[in-house]
Length: 140
Image 1 (spheres, rainbow, N blue to C red):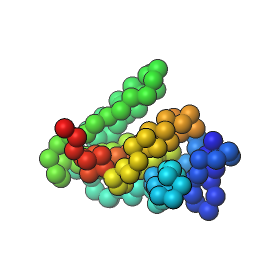
Image 2: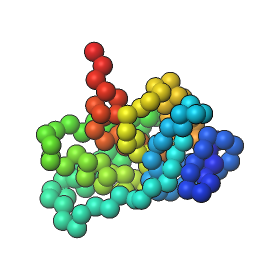
Image 3: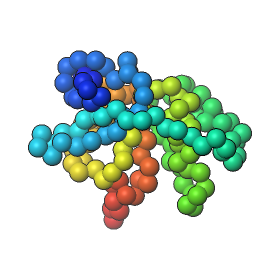
Image 4: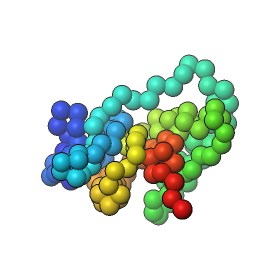
């Protein structure tokens, strides 16, 4: 289970993440060699978003597909710099109404990361990995 204490969610017995709302940054504790979530600021979108009608339509279609899926699924947004991938992802996160787990930096301990991310307590959430290649590096 996950517990919220002083804007931090730790992997101990306590409150389930699905009862929480908001945006959480995934952090790594080098000493304990485990991941935890720290509550962070919600996504603030700009007042003017170009292509908002298309973004909104796509996000609603994706959320409908998620609601019908029998297992976890993901979306990979690919495009040139400045194409609106991050804004689209943030819009989707806000529209979903689910807790968001932001993976903001390189994953230090892959085994601990996957153990944390597959915990049943965080299954009903959106995991947002911006700039995937920087978070996971390049594998060949």
